[in-house]
Image (cartoon, rainbow, N blue to C red; front, top):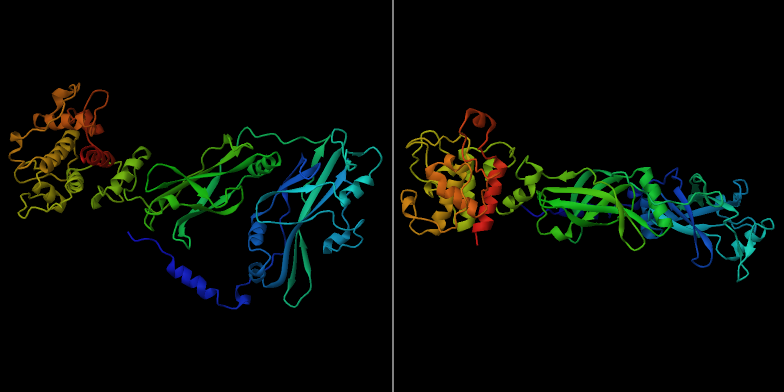
Length: 529
């Protein structure tokens, strides 16, 4: 495996950066998505006022992320660019809007009567707040022009609205002001947002009782300039989640994404998102904690969920986890979900032989395949490479891994001249092969021919209920494996071999490839001390 690098891509980016600005300038949009999910709430920040919470579209957020300085101007090939929001309001009806045509050119005009009410700068965050009807000169003047009884003066002499008796309606729109090179100021506006209300005739936001499940796609693995791996994926949020994200922020709560990754099939681990807010588009997840194991060949899985948190950060509600997206392919191929964590450990320990890489590990393992696993266990425990026997005694097998296993005494044949490599392995054969590996490593002078002269010290567990079915040549190995929790029984049965045609048909005592690899992991971890 080689460490993934993006040297070529970075060099390409550097070359492109030297091209004329006009060659790289993006086109200005012709439309802007209107603010969505508008929610009003009352706040006392900077005096009594209303807070307008809203979402902006992913395209506009991306535009704003370039900024209004040199980078932003060069991105769109303009001399000047600015992003802003205009907020309009009406009291007790949706007919008394403050909008004036001067707003379309951001002209101050008569500042008291015709200027824009709110002309707020915009930032890249998807969900944001703006304050209106604060105790400023503009708010005081417009409020004082309301009909008598629609407002009162607070202790500081500032006009305020009684929201028990009145309703404020709000609409908003986004704008972009830009000046093409050598051209004139140009203004682009979104449509007005849906109308939001606060007060007597409005319904306050209520915390959700459930959250839709996110759907993600297109997982890619890249590197930052610092060399840390980054998982990039695409997210499209349901409208209900966007609405709840806005509502949450309006009352001081927060709804955001949680992300987890599995590296090489290991357990799920939380990772940091570059932007955990509920926003559509590409999302980056930083895999810095796994920087030393993530390469271009690493098998990476990612999933996300929505979490609703209160103002203290406590998680009140979570959605189900999303679909799982993957990058790369596991070294072990197809496997059962319950086995992936230990299979990742097998890969880490170098216990997966070439003959099993990329294969369906849910299928039964053959005698030849398990011989290769036994060799891997021997090499891991001894730190010594196994060497195949020079003179092959078998007429039905010339597999080099079988010949290595035979040379170290882990296997023998089904006869003096046959190995039967494609026969399915039984559980008692697996126990015997691995016990021989351990004897070879720990008992000086041991050979398969002298096996009866050597014993392993262990406390023998209680007999299995099917002890009578365990072959005499395998019995000591079976109980050695059981005593060390390497191969255990099921419901007090060891299931050593198939003893009936029905058991033969269902593979009762045959180990699967994934089971064999898990046994290998336990062998190395439990006895490799």
